[in-house]
Length: 478
Image (spheres, one colour):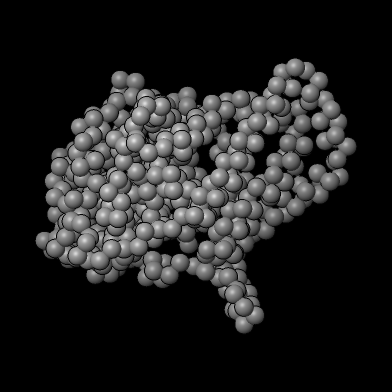
């Protein structure tokens, strides 16, 4: 049962324009030329990115005397000396953590799908709010899964949408039949309550949650739930989230590379420690017993006296880790999801994520140093410390950056762009090796955007961590 609006090429054939031998070179350049001609604005952005970075590298070379003077001056006072020591220690920690993650990533292998006979019964829950036609694509992709029909239950919950989401759900029900059950909340209560209703109605041994603007591949579900059969200590599994709408705007092209690094590198390393910190809302699986053990606490969670209406994915991951379960990542369980195409949607999404990160790190601190797991807990605690380091250093580095901009604006600009050129090369190489060389170059543009356009997100999220609201749940364009 195929989606009527999702192009099969986008879903089943990840882009790979890498030339593997001499005969591929001509095709490689033809593909690059096609991308340039079909998206000239994107080519202009990439060209501007490289001109900025290379121009900055040239200026850094020409301004060596200025940098030397700055280095002599910056340790003239005691506070500058201590700040330099602190910065050096943090850089050494980050470098060590990177190489440790690289070591773990190289050892990581996804768990292969078990046979149909061994696959558990599975309930897929799709909460939806103002998604319009997108929910139809999601449900059709799930119904097309290569999963035993007798073992698969699909539940869709309309969380009081103000658009025609419910009509699209009914259309999906007509196409899919009894395998799909649809429900409508009397009013908008939030994603957490929509999921809660699905959890209460679900009959499967494994619960799978999928966002209503996402589509899965035919083998996604079976790959996602197989770790529960192979590893009895597994309590949750994170899927591999890719960007679906990368052909529609510049921002999704940037986020495509960022998502691959975040999931296929970072979460693969976390998975080796049995401690993936967040199972994404776009695609995650949970052992039913683990969910039911914390369900009421989860749905009634509060922060500073207010009901929590964000971060439901990170919250339930925390509660499952607290029970002593392992949380894993399955690279072979793909989901493609829509991401913001405009700056306003992007920064609102990041504010929501960072607020959730602040809240759940506080929650995690209540059990992380206890004996929450029989196996070693050192890796989980290392990940926790790294999360807190980002939060604690947000304001000091913001102040330092502003001070540097005011006192040495040109030196700041050039040195930052050169740093981006160097540090962003790893995500470029990582994405290029697995997928596409041309698309990997967007990592440079994204790093510039993140450094100069999104630097304020974490400090702002810390200051407003108690604020409620999803921020991006507006009516979608039809």
